[in-house]
Image 1: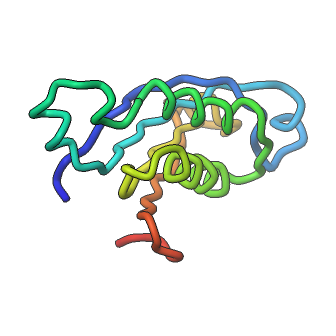
Image 2: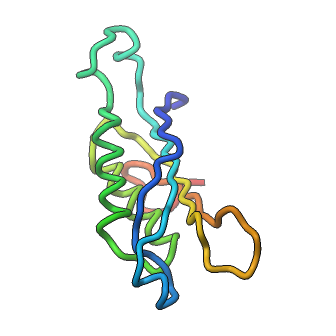
Image 3: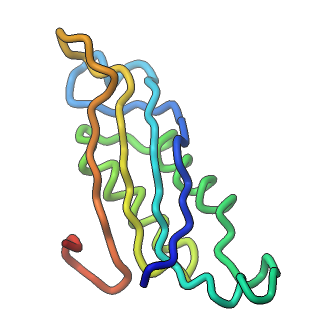
Length: 127
């Protein structure tokens, strides 16, 4: 599958981190979602009903980041990926790039992050 819907630069406040200070106050996270889906039908019909509703994907991914609490970025990215897969059966796979925009590090760094890929029906990470 080479078709994809790209949702880039989604910013959401969430409470995630292993340090006590990170578990008290929301901080900004940024996500990119590369959603694998066959968009052939939508490309021909030009009908919204024939494609994945990316507004719904954004809503569901945002809710995971804003409402759940995870210590590790890896766990949060997995939860977002699983939610995206559950949102629409036409989603065949998703790559989630998740960045913490203000990591508590003694360095001048723009962000830290992880990238996970999950595919429908696959129990293990895709390679």
